[in-house]
Image (cartoon, rainbow over all chains, first blue to last red; front, top):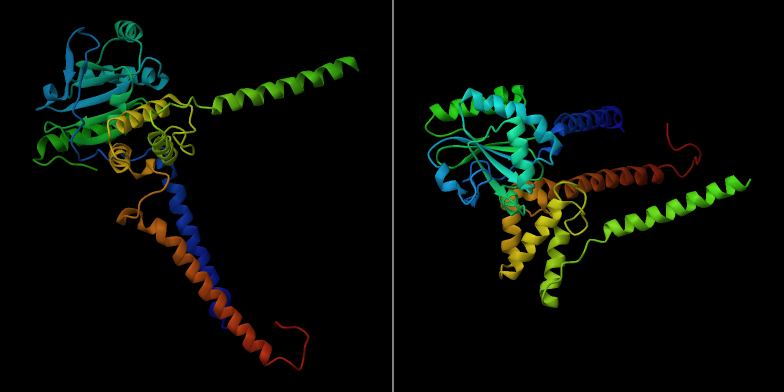
Amino acid sequence: MSRFSRFILPLVLFALLVVVLAIGIRQSPDKDLIPSPLIGKPAPDFSLPSLTAPGQRVSSAQLRGHWYLFNVWGTWCYACRMEHPMLLKIKQMGLIPMVGLDWKDDRADALSFLKEQGDPYQTIAVDHDGSEAIMWGVYGAPESFLVNPEGIVVYKFIGPITQQDWEQHILPRLQTGATAAAPASS
Amino acid sequence: MMTLRGASIFVVALMASLLLASSAAYAIAPEQMPTPQLEARYLALIHGFRCMQCQDESLADSPVNLAADMRREIRDMLLAGKTDEQIRDFMVSRYGYFILFKPPFVLKTAWLWLAPGVILLIGVIAALSIIRKRAVLAATDDEDNDVMDA
């Protein structure tokens, strides 16, 4: 048996294994963030009752022609409460309107929460039974979808948006998408 | 002494009630379908989808709200006359292949299906070559039957 197959080959194989495992470990923070198949595709069409304007509906057709951030939340969701101040900040910046999807929430709770904490949304659609959330592939709140004027989902952010997330992930896509003819998708 | 005995009875009772409680938690209320055929398709479908919140459980086994909502959607689609294929396509279009416990064989998942076979093949080739070398060694080695290896 040669020195190569005895000693060097196993070492090379081991090194290869180390590389594969290292890549696996490095990417493991993304394990919980399941990529959305909706990216680059039209956002789901919907027409749902409005939370704040009784008797009125919020529909995807109304939202065509401008960018919006579709934010799935609920008062029962602790991470959404953590995210709330950042949403108010985004509203103040005035760069993009936010459309809320109040997911399986109590109407009175939602209204009193917004009255207390402030309402960052342009409009809020009510998903009472959770079927609209499934249309968007939501599996945990908060989740936010960046939708362009053509109604295409450009980006999905999972979890509460922080200042850093806004600057690193959302704002650049909004800016490049707004200037380029074809919106960027990732 | 008595207190110790009392304590142990208490512990046993506690464990028994915990066991009962956990088995109750796993018994998801079965949603009745109008015909046995639909029921069978429904059960097969919900066992094939992953619960997105508790990722190692199927929709059939998961007690979380989202899984219940998904079961309801699947039920509604079945009752509306959708085929299994259409229902699967719908779920994949919203959640990606990740939601399927058995991913399909497509370009993106090819490595997943092929890698075990490739690794097995490498192992078989390696084993065969080692066995062949050993056989050659043994054949040339009848006279001195002491140490095989140097």
